[in-house]
Amino acid sequence: MSSVEKKQLIYEKSAPGRRGYSLPDTERTADAILGDIPEKFRRTDDARLPEVTEGQVMRHFVGLSVKNHHIDKDFYPLGSCTMKYNPKVNDVAANLPGFRALHPLAPDDSVQGVLQIMFELKTYLKEVSGFEAMSLQPVAGAHGEFAGLLIMQAYHRKMGELNRTRIIIPNSAHGTNPASVAALGWSTVQIECNEEGVITPEAVEAVMDDTVAGMMTTNPNTLGLFEKHCKEIADIVHKGGGLMYMDGANLNANMGIFRPADIGFDIMHFNLHKTFSTPHGGGGPGAGAVGVTAELEKFLPAPVLKKNDQDEFFFDYDRPDSIGRLHSFYGNVGNMIRAFAYIKSLGGEGLRAVSENAVLNANYLKELIREDYDLPYEAHCMHEFVISGSRQKKLGVKTLDISKRLLDFGMHSPTNYFPLIVPEAMMIEPTETESRETLERFAAIMKQIAAECESDPELVKSAPHDTPVRRLDEVGAARTLDIQYTD
Ligand SMILES: *Cc1c(COP(=O)(O)O)cnc(C)c1O
Image (cartoon, rainbow, N blue to C red):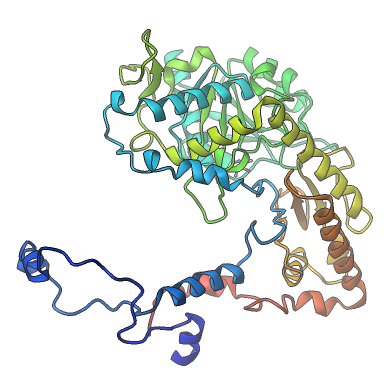
């Protein structure tokens, strides 16, 4: 790429002497301030920064933001990720100066307000999930899984059962589940779901033995189906001496309807950044709260936030059985404030309505497009569903091509090629925040693309046509990474 092209791509707008700021005069001169900095740390020449006006900076970033896809722009049905619209008022709450300016090392008695919010959030999450104890410390879903598995390990060690180092995982599992197991140095025992897309007690029974530490499963599973045998399965695992872990990254179908702890799960993580209103398109920061039964409470990450007899909140560090600390300070407090504001503004009935509408939207969309694509599992879905592009593949069009074509219509793609058990999978999660009109518009586009696959497959295979950049060389981008600002 020539440097001229590159400059156009990075929107070089700098010109010497342009300014986007003005600073008030200070009493101290620049030389006096410089004098405080040891000679060896001082720059010898000016930093190469763009010189631009405030207006140019504004247009630059707004321009970039509309070149990309995001939930504030249009539909984002990325299954398993719950890319719902997050009310901006929750961001406003997290950004209140009293929260934003808190110092993480402030003594407990000087930050009672935020501790109260964290404490109450734990109470609400307990209510939603049925668990009796909670930690807000982990900062991602996968981090929550790791915390939960460490708790499981600590439990077995306490019981003297050091031989339990295997975790049963269904073949529909999210990739982070086996990865978390591996991070612990444990191994997985994979079981298959049946022709209805759910796991059976028989499959679990067949692999349960005294080397199994427990089972990890997602409910609804990643096919968007409710695991209806969970209670029976939990009984089998418990009888065999194991614990049940629920991947609760996505509670969008469950709130106010199904509480994992009530049917035998012992540990679960939440993704506050999926279900509870932290935007998460850009990769963080997240919050992966972990809930456990009363029996496992003593193993929670330290410190544990508590309330004393005088109704004061404090961090308890005296936790001899704890798995220890997993993150600096108390996790990502901003996400906790957003989740708190979200739950407070919706209330219990509102959360239930979220789940009901998420399920309704997914089923409605599924019915709208089921004739045009293959539907591997017939059952009613929960908050998401999976279709297959196998029919289109026979015409030479891959699922990836269909996803790229969606970009021409200003829509984000569904999750592709996951779950792994469905060939040419497209995993679609509309979420509760989309209107009927948006769902119908998306369905009409999906129908049009299915028709194009028959009438003009090249059009789909060469998509996108109307985006700021055409199809990217993703492998090349990863292999010959170029992150330099200039040549
Ligand atoms: C998103 C997700 C995770 C992982 O969450 P991260 O915050 O990305 O680590 C785990 N399990 C399921 C089912 C998920 O959808």
